[in-house]
Structure formats: C-alpha cells, structure tokens
Amino acid sequence: ANWSVSSGTFTSGRRYRFMARARNSAGNWQVVYSTTLTTHDNEAPETGVSYPVTGSAVNTLAAITGTLNELPNPAVSPASTGTVLNVYMRIKRLSDGLWWPGLPGSWQAQLSSVTVNTVDPYAYASSGTWSLTAGGLPAGTDLVEGTSYYITTVGLDNTDNGGNLEAYFNVRGSTFIYDVSKPSTTITSPVHTATMSALASLTGTTLDEPGY
Image 1 (cartoon, helix red, strand yellow):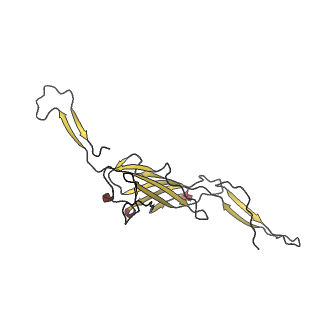
Image 2 (cartoon, helix red, strand yellow; image 1 turned 60 degrees about the vertical axis):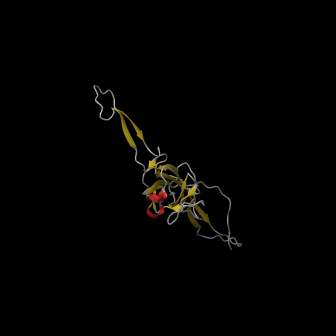
Image 3 (cartoon, one colour; image 1 turned 135 degrees about the vertical axis):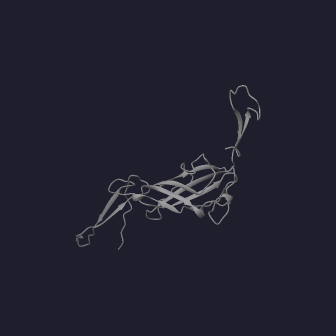
C-alpha cells in the first residue's frame, strides 16, 4: 500500500529529516524507522552580466561573461545549496526589437534563447561565473555600428522536478552599444603655418561617430 502526507511548512535552505514506521491492525510496530534526509530549496539562482558592462560601448564581442549565485546563500548548516546546471541568455537588438537565436542563424522576430557554453559554479555551486564564447555569439557582421543591444540571463539549478528557474528581464542584465568607428580631432588654433608671438592656449575640435 502507498501513503502520503501533504501538510507541512518548510524553510528554503534548511535540511529536514523525515522518519516513519508502520503499525498493523494487530498493534505490532515496525522496529526500525525508515528515515530520509532532504534539503528544501525553492529559490531560483541569480545570474548577472559582467561584460559587456551595462552603459558601455564596445568595439568587439569575443565573449559575454557574467556571475551566478545559487540561492539560498548561505544555506543553513548542515544543508548545502544546489548546483546551477545551465545559464540561458537572450540578446535583443534595440533598434528593431529582433532577437539573436545563436549560430547558425540571423536576427529574428521570434523570441530566442542561447545556452551559454561555460558554467563554473565553484565549490558547492553557491557562487561562480559563466561565459558565452565562439559559435554562440553574433559576429562582427551581425552587429550594427552605433546600435544598442540588451542582454538578459536566467539560471537553472538542479533541484527535483526540473529545477528552479530564474525569471528573464531582471535588473542584472546589460545594455551596451557597438561602436567600431574611430574618432577624429582637428587643431583650430594656432592656424596651420601661422606665425605666433604668444601661445596662450591650444584649441581644437573632436568628432566621434556614431557619437558615443
């Protein structure tokens, strides 16, 4: 026969021991308890983007890197946190609202996610780093000069029933500008080839396209 108990309130990050024994209709008790240990974890991990730094302008995108933190952190001893199995990323081109699907591919209207190819959770997976390199990134030809891009990530841990999944569009994302144009500068004073009796200052103009 099967049995179940559905009541109870548990705190995330704590370890619980469950004990059970049976009694039959004759009043005989099971001698040795059946026991099990489990850690309750109903909190999703937190991920963030380290590079590109939000608000920055970059001229290359060889990698996208970030941080991860498995919650609860720290877990109450002797419980331990779980492990972040995967980190997923969405990259949006803000000029037209298109999403990057990974390679091979091109920007598309359909919402797309890319799985990062390196997750380093450190000891006990309480904190660590992740990165996306090589084939998963948009190449230089896929990035438009002067255009802003938005990156948002989520982490998935290894708890039972599919794990705890972080929500997209959290505050730990990053918005950056792709800028490969070289700035220019011009000296306006003194005028070229001019003869000066004094030089109080040197002035000029500078120009940076697309202006970031």
